[in-house]
Length: 156
Image (tube, rainbow, N blue to C red; front, side, top):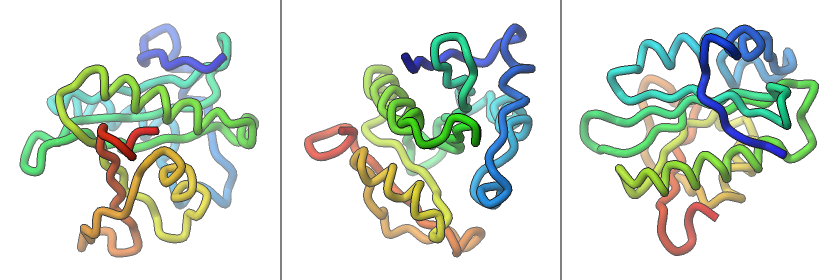
């Protein structure tokens, strides 16, 4: 059973050992980088979640808040270790993250930036109600900015 646990001094070493395949390394930061970003973005209410199956770390996610306009949640990273991919853990974890953010209720949407050639990730986000926002970040023109509103049709 998948659950989200915040990163702690007790689980960070196991979480830091998670990794994606070589082919995916251009799409997601290394686990240690995700954990470090959580610290760097602490002023933006960043949360690093360890995605666990029972008591085994299978992935990581980083969510923060945009503190300047446009306000909202930013799903910075979502990764499932290569040993645990293909089992639906990413989809289950994304649903839990969306449910948690919706319940928290600070904002009415969450955004994610995905490389345009990461078809698997784009499909996952679309499955959960994300759509192309139309925004193009000039710093990452090879990426797609996707948005999911916590209303009818979104956050499935």
